[in-house]
Image 1 (cartoon, one colour):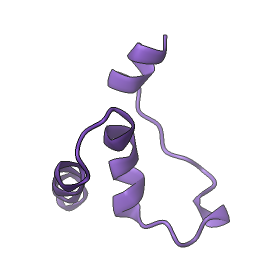
Image 2 (cartoon, rainbow, N blue to C red; image 1 turned 180 degrees about the vertical axis):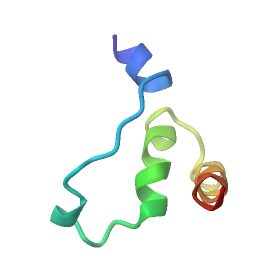
Image 3 (tube, rainbow, N blue to C red; image 1 turned 90 degrees about the vertical axis):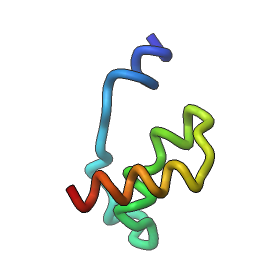
Length: 52
């Protein structure tokens, strides 16, 4: 089940106001970071997704 959640199911926290210093870019990057993707690649993909 953990593998399915890592690769298939996405989520967005509804409690971002609790941690106001986290940017939208970092929120979008987090699932990729959790799977071991390098930070630079995560940032590039997240930026593309946010500007699409």
